[in-house]
Length: 188
Image (cartoon, rainbow, N blue to C red; front, side, top):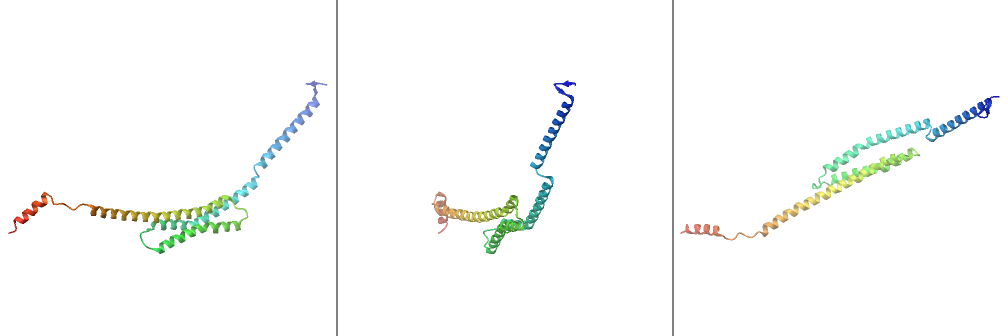
């Protein structure tokens, strides 16, 4: 019997098969663990397709509401507070309220449509409320700016009138005395 390293040939073959089997078993377990740790490809594909469909629905909703956002912005940009038109102010306030209302209506519909709602879709609808807040600030700032400009114009006008009234009357100087003498000498 031939022995190398104290093992016979048949023992070395058995040891080789045990080591090979252990290596294959550990490799299989590691692969299975990594495969399940990162999710199944089928489940990932399904969740990805659901997310893509939800994003398409959100984009379509955005396209539906885009005209309201644009028209509200243009109405505020064209608004002139100096012009007394209460219907324009009422229209702007109504449009801002409609933009704000999109957040509450669309989120309720989204909750009813699906049990599980992603946070990004809620943040998307939160943008409508933030846009309404921005438009409200823009509208208020435009009114405040116009009132400050009219106050400033009124102040400068009153200042000019005050400066004119504070200027001393011209005193008769040598030039006015010579004019008076020349006109009195021509009279008989």
